[in-house]
Every structure is written in structure tokens, then in C-alpha cells.
Figure 1 (cartoon, helix red, strand yellow):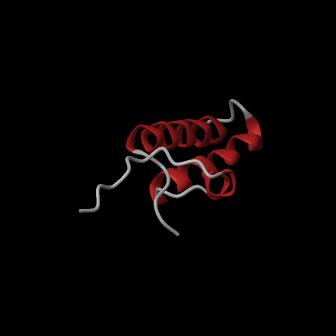
Figure 2 (figure 1 turned 90 degrees about the vertical axis):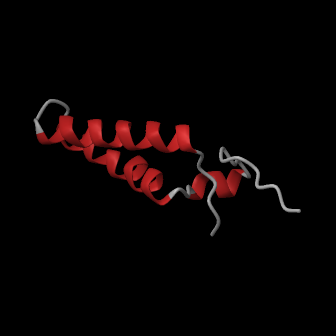
Length: 65
């Protein structure tokens, strides 16, 4: 399980997930806001199972010499 989420992608996921959870806690969008847990966790882990299935990587390619 290698990293497949880049830094910008991580930041967007964390901010969006936290915003959805915050809006849900504030009662603005209801319980559906808890779906924000998914992008929050994948952003914190740096790994997205959907990206693995689709073969997507947004992290930079490491240069092995």
C-alpha cells in the first residue's frame, strides 16, 4: 500500500473533509456531511483505494538511481 495521493491533493481532501464535517456538526447540511470522513482520512493517510483501483497517482514519481 504505497502513497498515491500528492501534496496538493492531500490538502484539498483534508480541507474539504474537515469543512463537510464542520458543516454537519453545525447542523447546516445534516448527517450527509459525515461523508467528509472519507476524504479526510484518505488525505491524512496519503493513500486512496479508488486511485489504486483506477491506477491513478497524484504524488511525484520517485527517482531511483
